[in-house]
Every structure is written in structure tokens, then in C-alpha cells.
Amino acid sequence: MRLTKAFAALAFAAVASIPTQTLADESGISFWIPGLYGSLAATPQQPGWTAAAIYYHTSVSAGGDVARAREIQIGRIPANLTATLNANVNANVDLGLLNATYVFATPVLGGQASATLMGIYGANTTSLNGLVTGTLSTPLGSIPFPPRFDSISDSVTAFGDLIPQFSLRWNSGVNNYMTYITGDIPVGAYQSTRLANIGLGHGAIDAGGGYTYFNPQTGHELSGVLGFTYNFKNTDTQYQSGVDMHFDWGASQFLSKQVQVGLVGYVYQQLGCDSGSGDRVGCFRSRVAGIGPQIGFIFPIGDKQGYLNFKGYKEFAGENRPEGWNAWVTFVISPAAPPPAVTPTKHVITK
Image 1 (spheres, rainbow, N blue to C red):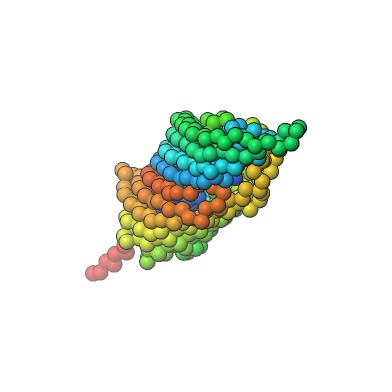
Image 2: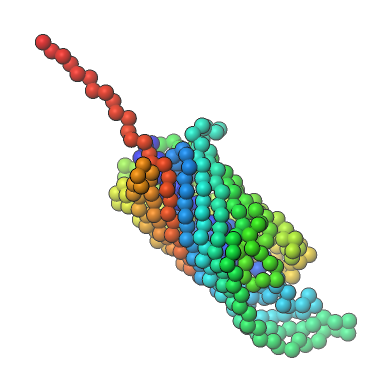
């Protein structure tokens, strides 16, 4: 059990995300970033305060369907225009995330409870280029729309939304279980007419659970976390994204007590159709998958424990959303595991 807790920072390091240009749902933008959870997601943590700083970068692109949805959202395609776009949209996002987590020492429902609040600051640069064609609906009937070439670029550097989260974890030998609930408080920089945003523009609730197999003696580890997102209506656009499903996984081997290597991946699928009076693109279900390497290092920082993790994903099987690649650098400071208890030695006195 003590060795399992020694790797508690790894579990927390996997918990870091925000709504950005990883794209799905309305105009391809979702609350959940695939890759939020990773290795050791369900293992217990040390009681007390833990802090994490994360640098996140993503570069993605998409073709006509997503480009059309973005132009509709920002108001560049009139409501009476049935449009076709031979276009592409590209986004590059760099974000800094700061997490503060408190792990409670008193058990809750027989498990370990923790509460997290995440803050976000970063930059988003998005461009759209392509040819718009179609027909206009008028009282006199449909008339051709003069072809128009759009070249739009937008960037923003600002604070993002606030992300609170509550988790419960249980441990039974090499088996670890976790459940969580999180959500989006839409206070970040957002304008419905802007191509690039940091904030999501609407609230969301996300909940799920996970499992981790971890054997400290062999160093073998395998984790999976399944979750579902309910999106509230965006009152600026009158658009409500459908329910999303996401599954994150990680598999790793500890080469020593300080070094971890392995693979990470995710599968993301929108289950419910989009809706609302502002929905002019139809169901617009989206999906994507990704896989990539990871490496982590554990080291002491005074009486604390430090953890540095690098991981990256290459996306594939994208539909109704841009796909590309993303990279994470995570640095965590957490309470160190207590030293093993020392059993007093009995001395026999002989004469």
C-alpha cells in the first residue's frame, strides 16, 4: 500500500484539461479534452494539498464540414443561404493550467475523497480559408449565391473557464477504483462571433469512473477511465451540443521506482445529436481517437514529492471535428509517502 501511495502524484498528473480547440460538438468544440486521464488514474493519493502546473499544446485541422459550422457560428453565412464550403480550418492552442487539489484524510463512503479547482490561461490562433458557394432562399425563390473566397484569421490570449472536480478512490491490493464528477463554469474569454476562443461559451457536467491495475512489485500498470458529458445550451447561439462519451487509457512499466514509460490513448464519440434553434448543421455527431508515448520521472523536493511527465497523442479516425496532434508537459508537487513503520528490535539478555 505504501508503494502504491508513493506514485500518487502520477494519478493526479493525469487529471488536467479544459475546453479548447480539440473540437467536437458545436462548431467542433467540446468540454472534454481527450487525454485528460492517463496512467494510475484510480490509485490513491497522499492526504493534503497537491499542486500541478501543465503546459498543453494542440495543432489540429479540418475540412469543409467543420469550416462551414464555424462560419455559421460566427455569422458569416446568412440564415437563408444553403452553403457549400471547399475550405479548411486550422487551430494552434497553447495553454497553461494550474491545479490545486486537496485530498481528505477522513474516508468518505469507504474511499478517499479529493476536491480540485483548475484555472486556465493561454492563447488560441485559428484560421479559416476556402470558397463559399450555394443558393439564397428569397420570397421570389432560390437564387445563386455569388462565389466568395473567405480568408479569416483570429487570435486571443486570455483566461479560460473554471473547472471544479470531486473524486472518490478505493484501493484493494493491486486493484484501484475511482469515480468523479466535474463541470465547466463558463467565465472564460468567449464571443460567439469570434473564430478563436479560450472559454467554451456554455456550462457542462461530466461524470464517470475508472479502474487501475497496479502492481508495485512488478511495476506493471494499466488504467482506463470512461465518462459522459452533458452540455447545457449556449444562450448566445441557441445551440445545444449532444451527449459525449470519452474513454482514456494508459499502460506503463516502471523501470525503477523513479522512471515510468508506456503508452496512452483515447477514444471520443458524440452519442447525442446537437439541437436548439441555432443548430443549422444537423446532428453533427463527432468522433476521434488518439495514441502516443509517455515517460515520467519521480523525484524528491525537500519533504515533498515531485513528478514530471511528458506525453503526446497522434489523432486518427476523426469525423466532424479537426484532428491533429497534442502534447502535454505536467509538473506536480505532492506530499511524499510516509516512511515505513519501524518495528522495535527485541533484545535477549543472557547471563
